[in-house]
Image (cartoon, rainbow, N blue to C red; front, side):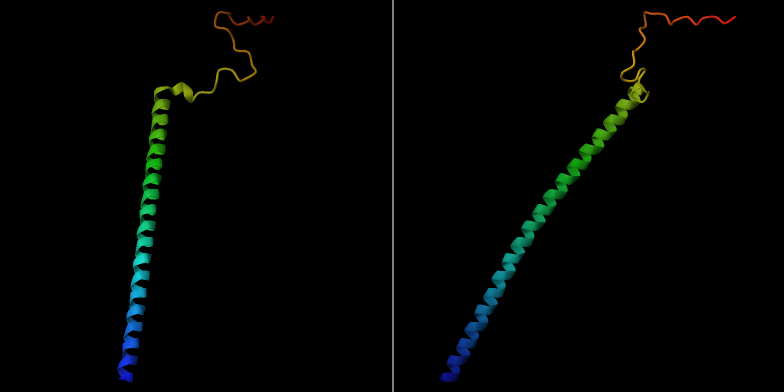
Length: 96
């Protein structure tokens, strides 16, 4: 009778241990699934931002190809006076 009682306690202890391990495994699986979801969302955001950057770069390149003046230096630097198109340039004095 005492042996049967000891065996019963051992079986109950083993069942509680197995239940504990199962609950911990289930909780870890939930944590891993949540982390995977967050990682997938971050990857999707990064991909979308990269696509936007590429689209902006292509649009900038297309604008520069349509308007080549963007590539040329300015006609006058800041602080310099720009020549007026109505005024003829000053004549050079002739040298004898």
